[in-house]
Amino acid sequence: MYDFLESAGDPDDHGWQDSANCLGVDPDLFFPERGASTREAKEVCRGCVVRGECLEFALQNGEKFGIWGGLSERERRRIRRQRAQAARSVVGA
Image (cartoon, rainbow, N blue to C red; front, side, top):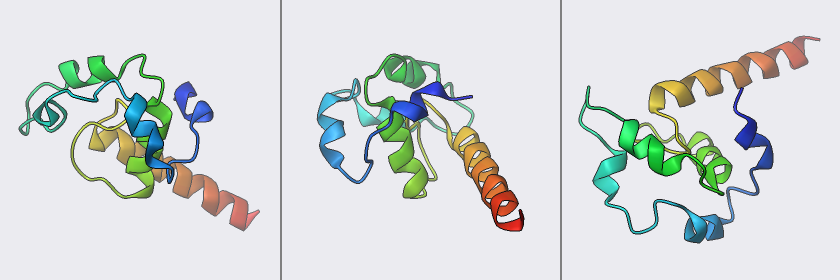
């Protein structure tokens, strides 16, 4: 589903932030008001070489707000749910 996740490095190594497309971009762009468009923020993320690391960082740290790795909180919540279901099916197998 999210192919860029497979190329993600260690999200605990925060050096990835130095290579992010969003470096120097107004952070408010990534934290739009409720109901506002996320298109511009996601466009900054598109093609970013550290998109996977950014997303993993947000997933592992429970980021509840903003666009991380090109995904909204709703999209990240879906990934967390899928991972939890996969983990439960492995444990139950």
